[in-house]
Length: 346
Image (cartoon, rainbow, N blue to C red; front, side, top):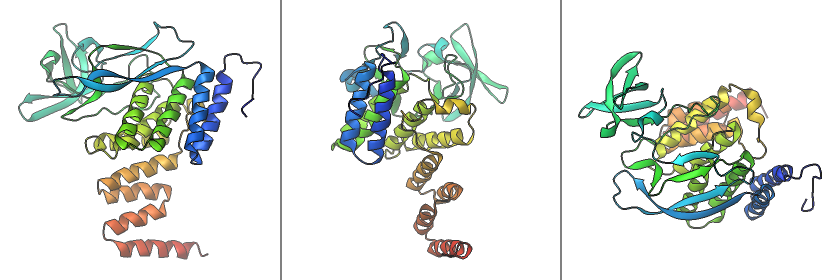
């Protein structure tokens, strides 16, 4: 496979697509060093230039002094410098006109009493109006810092069939790192996003320092999610992000919410034909894996009944019995196994 060429394709994209498939094959069979080499070869074939570096920024809302944060510089070969994907900024009340209508937000009209609704209108005086079930909750001056974004509406230039990105709703952590100097990022082509997906996966398997590997993976995934353009790539990136966050007490709630959203995506696909794009290049997991991930997240929070419901949906008997045992219902686990043996005699 090392010497395979495609004479009809001088861009290197066809070769890169093949290299990515080979990389995921080795990854699924636990040959992580070998899979990394194939992912890197795919990046060379597309002409993808990337560098993991550091920049001063803030990770928490109350952080006064900027510290060194991981940042990925990346550029696709055939994308112009002025074709930007997004400006790396905190998406909150700083620029009211940038907040999409339909964005879910909350604010405290009175101390300790939060109101939650959707942004329905931008006013000329710099305020926004919130409504809930077509009832007006009031106008909020975003410059006073009272407005809290809960769930972003999709931008007009983002296809509406793409998976929803759940926002981190935490009192301390920012949803995204806020860098001192504004970063203008160029758009990445889907194949280059798949390269980053592969590198993000192997970074967790090959690096021994857990905190470093989680930071590297999160940096790769954040760069991918700046370009929302492929259903499969976005599903895989959000799944990987949730896997990394489910072990964090600060991000566990967001991880569960994201897993729930991904399960819904699999159950209700608006445009099935779009799901096949780059499906073999992004290493997309099947419906069974997504349901299992959601059930595992419920188990971490000791929500055993919710986990059992998810496992029943996909017929994961082992996990059902594990949940029943954790919830001190071993007799129910035994009865479940016996009932199945009665139905399917071996």
